[in-house]
Length: 162
Image (tube, rainbow, N blue to C red; front, side, top):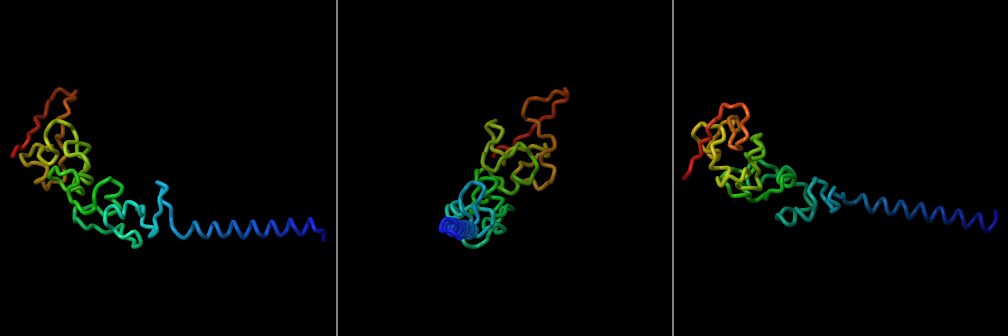
């Protein structure tokens, strides 16, 4: 074996050990899609968890400290605050706005349709009960205050003003 062959083998071994070390270091903490670290592998980056007073070293994606119907992971995905049941302050809990199936409500915008009436004060299904107090599952039915009704039969929208 020549000196040249020995040097090549040593170089290959050193490169392999270096690559293995890098792979080991990078696998100790997950990296979130946003490029930030997620030490507890719960789907929420450490930076977000710290900003919202959650423990970045304890998997807490299923937690719901504000009891609004959205888990911490749901709060992260929807851009809401996990310790505030109504992030946008419109009278409807974040979970209700996310799970109601309506495009007319956004948990981060108090007046999603920009008509001057907060989402929680609107009565999108026309039953005489404003959205914040309405427990019905079909809150979107009759939600036609956008003004683009092409069918000709205009459904009146009722707003409850307090």
